Every structure is written in C-alpha cells, then in structure tokens.
Length: 307
Image (cartoon, rainbow, N blue to C red; front, top):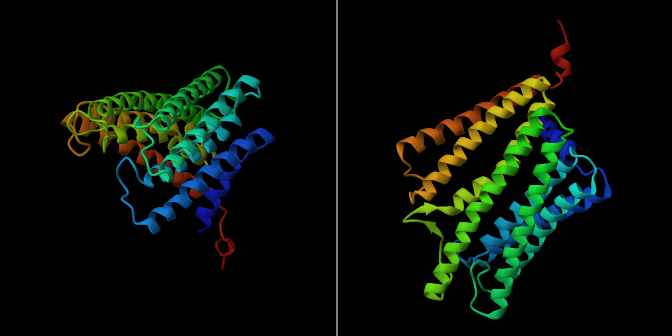
C-alpha cells in the first residue's frame, strides 16, 4: 500500500495544475471522468446493451478517455514554455474534447446514435459538429507537438513520451477518419447506423483507434515512474525510449492487422511476432521502472535497527 500511495503521490505531483489556466483544463478533465463514471452506474442500473450504436458505453468510454486526455494535456503544458499559442493549442484539445463528450452523451440520452447518424436534421447537425470538433482537437495536438519539438523543459523520458504519444494520437485520428468514411457510407447505403465499423471482413478499427489514443497516457505514466525513481536522467530516457519503441511496434501490428481486415486474434505470423515483441518490451520497461522506484522507497524503522 505504501508503494501504491507513493506512486500516486508522484503522479499527482507531475500532473497537478500550477496556474489558473491549467486548473481550468484539469477540472474539465475531472468533470469528463466523473461523467463517465456516473454513466457507468447508469449503464448497470439500466441493464441496456453495452454494445451497439446506441448504448451507455459511449458516454462512459468517451468521458473517461477525453478526461484522461485532458489530464495528460495539463502534464504536457507544465513542461512547455508559457506562450499564448501553446496554451491555445492545449485549450483546443480540451475544449473540443468537452464539446464532443457533451454531444455524444446528449445523443445517448435522446435515445439515438451519436456517430454517422443523419436520420434527422438535428442528428445530421450534431454529427457534423462532432466532426468539426475533432478537427479542432487535431489542430491542438499539432500545436502541442510543434511546441514540444521547439522547446521542452521536462526530462528526456517525458519528452519521448510526449512526442511519441502525440504522434500516436494523430495516427488514431487518421484511423478515426477512415472509420467515419465507412460509417457514413454504410448509413447512405442502408439508412441505418452500422452496428460496428470494421475494416474489411473483421478488422477492428475500434481497437486500433483506442490503442493510438491512449499511448500518450501509458508513456506519460512510465516517464513519471522513471523520472521519480533511482534511474538517472539518461537511463530514464533510455527506458522510456525502449517502451516507446515497443508501444509503436504494438500499435503498428494492431493497425496493420485491422487494415488487412483480420480479427485482432488472427494476425499474420509477422504481425503476431511484432505485437508480442512490442508488448514484452513495454512490460519489461515498466518492470524496470517499478523495480528501480521500489529501491528508492524509504526503509521502515525496524529495518534500520541493528540487534
């Protein structure tokens, strides 16, 4: 428990907002995570199907996902120069996330699909607005990526996590764009929102999209672990860099498998090897970071007693 408490303290010290603007973004993220949690309770009470175009899954997943994204943006913002254009980029990411989460949640409460839905003028307007908000989010991510490339005040591990994580978000956006095109075509052809968007016969577009979106949080957590333990600055950067390579390999394998039209559990042998190697590398890097941090924990008083 002490180890978990120490880790939570380190993460909080790394992500906590330090000025009014960061606090605003942080509270936006907190509100979205809370909304996701509340709708999780609603889903349990309602006994409605979890999957499908109209489900409580969407307010839950999008609320939590966008909330975590907002917290990650605050962490990034703390390590970038205090420039108006940098803050604007961060604001675009968070406020477009809030807008999208609100629209998706509102559509579920209306009892209709949020994505690809053009059944009525209202549904079409909401779907169009969601698409425009996604464009603003991508623009904000690009601004943060440029800022991190120009000047980054954090450690090497954090910089690797930020750069690779933001590029992965952009890759997820490209996957999402293809998903939107497929979903809209399906609606035009049938007049109904598709139950699930697949690439080819069985390619999981949803999985590839999700893995790309959340690499930033995964690598950020690992960077915080590395930089708060006994690893030196250079070693922390090397461990996080290895994890970033592993994550990139896993993301590539999942994405290629999806675009090939294959189910996640049926990749080609080459993609299976790439995926396993990537996961093992990330796990090994996480193990090193945790082990080195545990060595840094203060010893209990009885361990200092010499009989």
